[in-house]
Amino acid sequence: MAVLAVVTSSPAGIEGGHLVIARSLVTAAREQGYDAHLVVTPDYGFGRTLATYRGSWTAGVREVAGGRRVDQVISLRYPSYAVAHPVHVCWLNHTMREYYDLWPAFAASISARARFKEGVRRALVRLADWWLLRHRVSAVVAQSQTIQRRLLQDLGVRAEVLRPPPPQRAYRCDSYGDYILAVSRLAPTKRFDLLIRALAEPVARRVRLVIGGDGECRADLQALSTSIGVADRVVFAGRLDEQALTMHLGRCRAVCFVPFGEDYGFVTVEAFASQKAVVTCSDSGGPVELVRDGQSGLVCEPTAASLASALAQLMEDRALSERLGRNAAAQVAAMSWPEAVKRLVIV
Image (cartoon, rainbow, N blue to C red; front, side, top):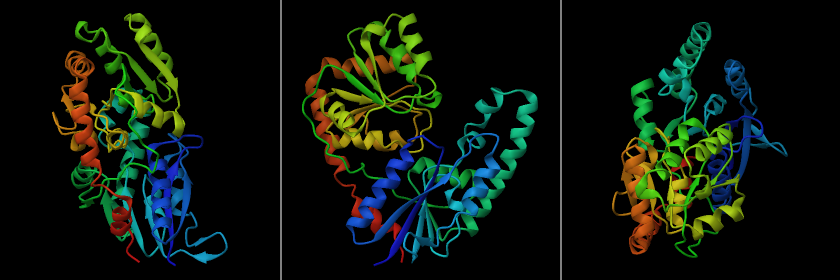
């Protein structure tokens, strides 16, 4: 039985999408007969970026508990691809986006002194990524076309695309209820502020919203919903456990996911698995690759007015929501974890 180590890095106490994908891959690999183990390397955050890379570089992944030799490593989020193993496939979730596509906004938000310091770190990290993804891994597979394109543009690295299927949960469709569900970490790039502002548009005055997730923007988002007069139609449900997540996915009318330049966004396929359409924006990255406008969801412009119109359309037309949801379920049914394991395991 081949032994696999699925490796990703993560800040302490943070439950990111890459961890859900990593755990799902471990489960799927075990179901396919492999002895799979999750290894999490540390992410020390800004100011200690080089220490984070050093932590993955020096991580021991040649053996697992019990002294069994690891036959292959599959790494995900930066900089887990720095771990050393002769058989190493990187299924890339994302690099450090603040040093890539988010650099202009990030640099503009800090002082000139900090910008110089971060600029030096940025140059070192990009050089390290360029070397690691060429010399430290056997193959690079991107989790979306968005990631594939960034790899080629930023680092000259070519990669095939393999999109993660929905995590293994008990998805169901109980009804097409009276609210829109939005689930993600409450961070600036997820653009919950755009979604809340859409509710203030006259066309969306009857749209109700449940927000699942927590993060640094929660207080600001709550204040925004109050200041523009939509607080009575927005529920901040906090972080959803698996039972609460599948319950809301099963009962909502549709799911709204409007991040900026998202790498993948598995919320989309989780909604599809629950027979729910997804509303996203034309600049949302990974979700746009999955949502077929007018077939499995709606793709709108990244404005409050356009988003409000799309949400109102689904809330006013239950039959449309049901039809798009059925199409979405059929679309995601073609994605499977056994196929993902088959493509990623090379031993």
